[in-house]
Length: 554
Ligand SMILES: Cc1cc2nc3c(=O)[nH]c(=O)nc-3n(C[C@H](O)[C@H](O)[C@H](O)COP(=O)(O)OP(=O)(O)OC[C@H]3O[C@@H](n4cnc5c(N)ncnc54)[C@H](O)[C@@H]3O)c2cc1C
Ligand SMILES: *[C@@H]1O[C@H](CO)[C@@H](O)[C@H](O)[C@H]1NC(C)=O
Ligand SMILES: *[C@@H]1O[C@H](CO)[C@@H](O)[C@H](O)[C@H]1NC(C)=O
Ligand SMILES: *[C@@H]1O[C@H](CO)[C@@H](O)[C@H](O)[C@H]1NC(C)=O
Ligand SMILES: *[C@@H]1O[C@H](CO)[C@@H](O)[C@H](O)[C@H]1NC(C)=O
Ligand SMILES: *[C@@H]1O[C@H](CO)[C@@H](O)[C@H](O)[C@H]1NC(C)=O
Ligand SMILES: *[C@@H]1O[C@H](CO)[C@@H](O)[C@H](O)[C@H]1NC(C)=O
Ligand SMILES: *[C@@H]1O[C@H](CO)[C@@H](O)[C@H](O)[C@H]1NC(C)=O
Ligand SMILES: *[C@@H]1O[C@H](CO)[C@@H](O)[C@H](O)[C@H]1NC(C)=O
Ligand SMILES: CC(=O)N[C@H]1CO[C@H](CO)[C@@H](O)[C@@H]1O
Image 1: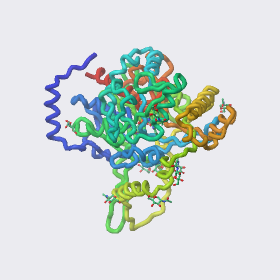
Image 2: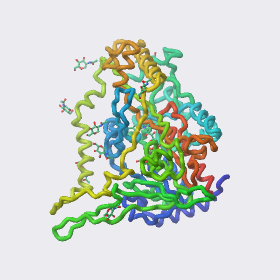
Image 3: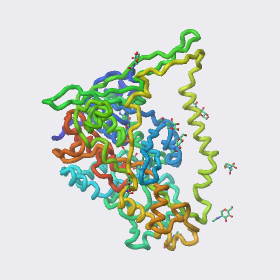
Image 4: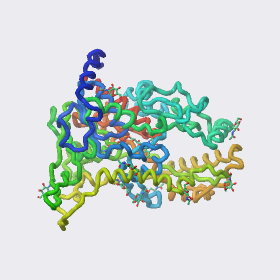
């Protein structure tokens, strides 16, 4: 099926929209401000995939879309916009979910911080990764030759911030024309030349790869990041912000989806086209009110239901998506029963198969004063920037000057006693196979071999830290158990499988098995984690899915 929309008709409609809609008029944080509670599509989660879906579906002026996001707006959040700050300040902040894993048995029972949100390193993954998805699902839509147009739609190469020549370090021909900006580092470092020379001299050991987006990711090259003009190019900046002026797109922030509600049934198949949401765990929003000198908190709403005429698209990510499915009775029936949730469809794979990339840093002591150490040790400059944001945030939201005080009981229906706002158990089970250990050992050995090449002589003084001091395979594995953390790439917790397979959660069109009206579009559907940073592949799969949805409803 193909959609035919006259370009002329579309332009006319857009012109009408401009005259009635003010910019940013579609951004809400209070459900009572929403102009309506019924849309064609309700998209849950304004992350990498959800923003693509919202942007692409609203290209059709006939489709109305509500995008719901639990988090706050990223406008003015320095840690999100300043590329250098993102890695140090984003995890564990007001813009992240402060999840942790269950104790990792193979990492000396360490509990790892498991933030959600995304940073900048951009890799799309090799063609083979996607061909494997096509093979596994028995659907050619996911074969790279059919997926490439969607990669090209998602990102584009822009010059580095200092506009230096990047000739020979990137291949513009393998890049696309999408809204997410990708660039090479704008501040070449004294490491770059050594990396390139080591690689070129090594031959097959560390093959030089001029551009890892070429379809073959194997090799060494200069990193590409989603940064444009010195500002982080996030899905929000690239896909959402430019389209907030569309009258058919409403975005509701600071509201969590607590479950999907069965809206009916179609020939015995449960239909899920309703979404329950709440601003806070109790389902109420407290509005501070002054009556004389008495401060009161007036409850103005309980949980709200919004309805999708066509589809609900679940894009809450690899942790949020299975949590919402389970809260809605879609999951392993026995497990749901134990949690006191009435099972609607038995889908044992929901929330299983979590795949992620563990990361472990190898350190060397070097003869150089151009490292980040001083910047990271002397926080006075960073603190000044952060203080400005923190001060403004405090100023904006204010402290309520309370003139009265009360001592109360926590009611039985308070947030602490409720499922939806309780963090799910997250178990990537890192390092628990001999393959995982072999792979990490190989990576450590490769890094060490790389750093003994001639370009590093006189520069590298020694290896550093407990991993650096480990010599035997056994010692390296033992040190790794204390050093491995996550690179925050969870995938596959609602994996796709062939249409009629009993395993898996979604079919190759990303429709949830056993129900109607519900699709999942985010990293959780990846049948296998690609050897790539996961945002690039998420953009590609979301672009692919947006087209599926448009084709289904034109
Ligand atoms: C600290 C960190 C660093 C990373 N660095 C990189 C990197 O350098 N390169 C890279 O490629 N990838 C990186 N990643 C991974 C990348 O963030 C993910 O692969 C990508 O964002 C997945 O997209 P998604 O759409 O599946 O989920 P997400 O982008 O996580 O989007 C899910 C959205 O749903 C919202 N949500 C969840 N539950 C609810 C609910 N109940 N109600 C309403 N909204 C909800 C969330 O708040 C979130 O906005 C990093 C991740 C982290 C945490
Ligand atoms: C996460 O933790 C940090 C530090 O403890 C806190 O400031 C922040 O508000 C938390 N984030 C959320 C979304 O609760
Ligand atoms: C997050 O913040 C909390 C409270 O400040 C702290 O205890 C915890 O160690 C932090 N975690 C990370 C990963 O920084
Ligand atoms: C890398 O090789 C080039 C060309 O041989 C040489 O000019 C340059 O100095 C080398 N750089 C480093 C850091 O070794
Ligand atoms: C929204 O604004 C962008 C420029 O920021 C413009 O190109 C686009 O035409 C506008 N769209 C509508 C519907 O007004
Ligand atoms: C919690 O209980 C109180 C008292 O019974 C009731 O008024 C309130 O509506 C309940 N709130 C929710 C969210 O159920
Ligand atoms: C680094 O700085 C110190 C102190 O200023 C100096 O002694 C040393 O020579 C410098 N090292 C290099 C490699 O420039
Ligand atoms: C930190 O940096 C500031 C600004 O450059 C400088 O004035 C201060 O002396 C530094 N502090 C330390 C402990 O090095
Ligand atoms: C995996 O974890 C289990 C405990 O959960 C442990 O008994 C087993 O030895 C681990 N396997 C490896 C290869 O580390
Ligand atoms: C709106 C507002 O309060 N802006 C302030 C943000 O913080 C900086 C530095 O503290 C102030 O200069 C601004 O006035």
